[in-house]
Image 1 (cartoon, rainbow, N blue to C red):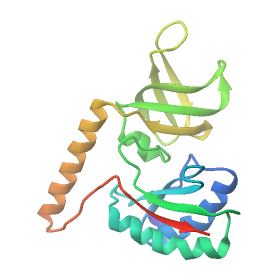
Image 2: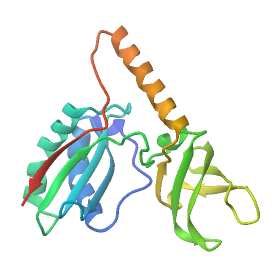
Image 3: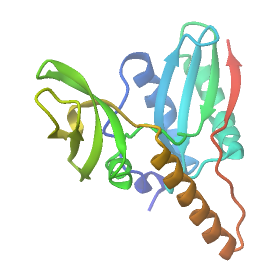
Amino acid sequence: MTSNDMFVPRVITESGIEARVAQIIEPVIEDLGYQLVRIKLSSRDGSTLQIMAERPNGEMNVEDCAIVSRAISPVLDVEDPIDRNYHLEISTPGIDRPLVRPKDFKDWVGFEVKIESQMMRDGRKRYRGLLKQADDEQILLYIEDAVGGPVEEKFMLTELEDAKLVMTDALVAAALKRSKAKQAELNEKGEVSFIEDDETSKTHH
């Protein structure tokens, strides 16, 4: 089995320049044992290219960010997909993480999410609600602010433009509990690790 066989493709992906960047760096990241979460090119600090990544088990620390940065920087310099100076920022998904793979949704059933659909549905594209169910193809949301009262709405994963967890007290508590459980498991194995919402940054010309 190759390292690429370990990774499940994202169902929510980028478009335009960001998609081109993904095409360039995703194989590099996967060969290192990480998976791509999201790419975002913004005007922050002039121009910033944020690469969000993690290990398949959800871990990512500062050293991991540095490893990814060192690997993809020369590739981006050669391919040069962005026609201006920019800051390269490698970061972890964080607590209110983007949801881009079926596993992401299934892992966080019971928590609030924000989604944006590709097409208008009943005059709107953005929704916020409780993620009640998720499988490899679709999700079920409980939406309290629906016109006419609370409703349950199904969405195919392939129709989503964007999705992320909503920062709530319940989410923070659950994330900390999972982190402590993972750390305890690593301690039992005699391994040392830590998970931080941190980043490494570098300027590209």
